[in-house]
Every structure is written in C-alpha cells, then in structure tokens.
Image (cartoon, rainbow, N blue to C red; front, side, top):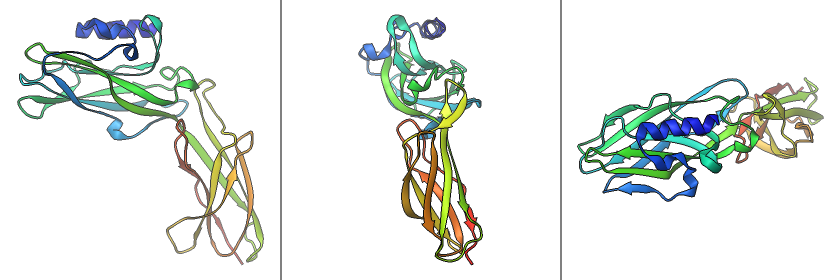
Length: 262
C-alpha cells in the first residue's frame, strides 16, 4: 500500500495517469516532438548498499523540445519489479519534485534530482539486488509531454567485504604459508553481513618495493564464505584476496597482509 500511495502521489503531481500502473506493462507515452535524450543515475556508478547507511544519489534527466522544457516538470522514479495494481517491489522517488534544472540551450534542459535509498526500506529483500529501471517524464512549454518507461538502467548491489590473514609471520624462504579469509555481503533481510558461499576468489601478492599485485592462484569460498589456501613464501611482501564481483555484489579486495620472509 505504501508504494501504491507514493506512485499515485507522483502521478498526481505530474497530472499523468499512466504512471499509476506498472511501467513495464506499458508502451512509452508521448505527445508532439519532445524527447528525453539522456538519463544518468549516480554519475554512471553502481549504487552499493550495506545494512545501515542511507545512500544518497542523483538522477539527471535531459529533455529537449522545440518550445523548450517547462522548468521543474521533468521527473524520474527508479524501480525494480512492477506488481499488479500499480505496486512496485522496490521503488525510489526523488526528495524534491522540482529538482535542480539547468538550461543547456533554448530547447534543452537537464534536471538533476536527489534520491535516498535506505537498505532497511527500499530494497525490501535480497531479490531486488541487481538491475533497476528508471522511468522518466518531461513536459514542454507548448504542452508536449513524454513518459519514457525504460529511460535508463542502474545497478543496486549488496555491499561486500573481504578479509585476509597470512601465517606464520615471519616465515622461512620457500616455506608454505596458509592464507585464510572470509567473503561476506550485506543481507537486506537480516540487516547483517553473511558469508558469500561458493564464490571464486583470487589470491594475490605484491612484492616489497613494488606497487602491483599479481595473481598467484584461485580459491573458492566454502558454505560460510570462508577462504583457506596455501602458497610458498618466496619474498617479503603483501598477500591479499580479490573478488571480481557478481551481478548482485560488487568487486572487493581485502587489505594486504605483510609477510616477512627470512
């Protein structure tokens, strides 16, 4: 009910009734020669949510019409899954319906909106991690209008963390060391970090005096997200784990753990 009310309020503000039903179920709606030419979410970067901190991001909508765009009458919403009767599973609307608009020229305007995503409210559960859709609306000075139901896509990801520990320290040259760690990610249902199971992770090494990590081998997290592998200690330097990410979880590297080789 909360999402249906929010969407109805948005539609009322724009006086555009098609926005009260799931956007994915409709074709784009427009009148005249108005166009939405560009929509940028979060500066083109993924939106990464943990378990507590609210993420503030922007959506910038650029629209053009031969009569010019009416100030404050573009508007975006971002959603994950449309449900029956105008509801959405995952929905975020701007803090201010007016936005901050900049006239590019006599026909084109870019309006930027600030939005907030609370990991304890907006994702609703872990199934909304991944790709979200932006629906954008614009109104021209001559009354032309457009609603672009899939104006842009954006990734909303579950934050990830990765740890490492290499031992023993110090160690004799060419002796085996054991490197342990854990890969965890935000759970939007328990509001805690939990182990990310069965994921490929790279063990990397940076020799003392250099700035680049090289991959030594691959390992896979166990059912609780834990890592454990062995390698030879050939020189002083830092060991770390690196996770390349998935469609729902961002890439992450652990801090480096320095090992002194005797």
